[in-house]
Image (cartoon, rainbow, N blue to C red):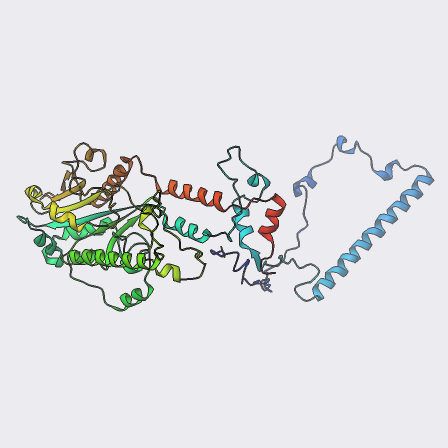
Length: 501
């Protein structure tokens, strides 16, 4: 389909550049033409002798007895013979004329209708989705719900800011799993992080397990979730071109997936998951992100904050309620095509819409099964920051952390040990504590368990709303705020009129 996201303010119609291929050239060699006279009955019928019943209907000549009827009969036969000769002559002349006419004959040539080169994208889209009907414009019984098709007044103040707020609400849930590799007897966090710096320091099955979790994506070229909000949902084209010219890193023990350059990513229609392998450089990377975020937040507040009025009362200027929407500067709105408003934003989406229950998922690969008792969870939990942590909630990440321990057995199977909040870890499957899984299903089961843990944690919160509910409520808010009420005639006139005229 030759449709794109075209704004009716800029271009009302779209042009198609399809060319008529024309009629194919005829073939002179058509083979041998056989003149076959069609028969209604097979030839064997002529050899069958007639009986008395076949002669029950007499011929016309046998019933003509008097002279008057005979003359009329001869006259009728003359008319029939003349008509036969005339039609035969016309057919022969038409055949000769057809042979002398150049191909193709303009009188008999079948031509397709001309291709439409200009069409209104709005009308085509609404027609495909069955919105161009009077029923779609009728008011519903419930006054809180608008009709299926309404017109929004884009000239009102704050309209484009509201559309930007709608884009900030993701259509899918995002989860993050942090993967660690623990050698036999290791208890220090720095030793554990150093294991993934070299390919020779990890088991081959560990690297195969990572590749089964998702596919690698470049953080600066990926438009989805990357494990941290500072690098998610945005593209950096200039940095992406530089990354394409530089050779990829090889020989690492999966430290390339630490979130600085690449991560392992998996997504479906409802959820997206980023698998991050922390390395020794992760702690410096997290620290620089937090400093940059605080610096940008201070600069943005200094830029947007209006000058303080004269001090009248201590509580006069305080807001009475908090809002998730970013404050808009007075007498200024976001204009389509103006990149100045987007350049001031540090992240791809506003984090106010992404706050949810804190849920940390750690996947630990153990060379020795007994080391799960000595895993330094207190130190590792500081490396699992995603930027979505709600600052209003107390910091109890260690108690709310879910850990999936994996130990490779000599038989080629893998033993699973789950650690997490008591009473709720068993509700998220398909992995259960003590399960032994095969090499083929290990990555899929760990990924599904990570997604289900995040779902289970979000469902435990009474204030959680799924992404589609958030977007639905925001759309209803925009419709009720910017709806332009008009009659059916005015609606269709405004919808299909030429905006360029």
